[in-house]
Picture 1 (cartoon, rainbow, N blue to C red):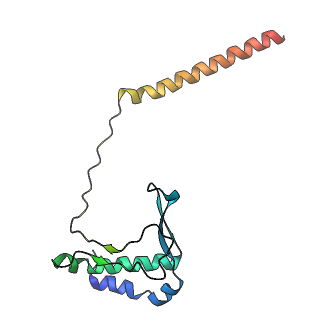
Picture 2 (picture 1 turned 120 degrees about the vertical axis):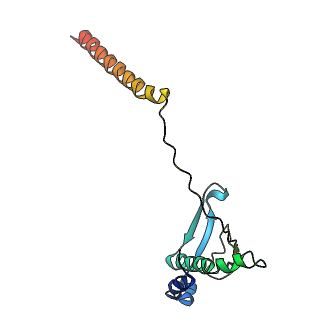
Picture 3 (picture 1 turned 180 degrees about the horizontal axis):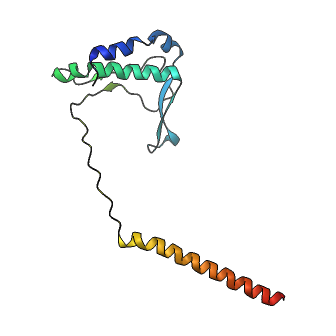
Amino acid sequence: MMTKEQLQKIINQFDEDDLKRQGIFGISQYGGGSDESFIRANKEGLELFAVELLKSAKETDNVLSDPEKNVIAFNYDEDWVDENSDTFIQYVEPIADKQKLKPKSEYKSTFVDKLVPIGCGLIAIILVISAVVGLVTLFKWLF
């Protein structure tokens, strides 16, 4: 976990004013549906978005410890945010919970799983026999 100072050091490496002049960033949905979303951005826009996320990460502890605050405002109405975006992120709501990874359960093969290779092999054998019988019959007709 990074400290606030480490995060600020990374943030300071970016020239935000220059990035804001050149950056384009937007979140859109493919086909207008909600099944597939994507980011449409140039490099500067991605860097600006990353800086905004780093700033939010830096402020997370302050927001979580202050009962009056529960969100971190996100600058979504700036020029570098694509006005054609379908989704505008207006704030970040930090949570204290950590993700708990579920242990991977071992996959146990079932009877059907064992039958699939046997069935495919039988179909292949039948196809080969049919092709041989067909070729022999064809040769008998021709010769």
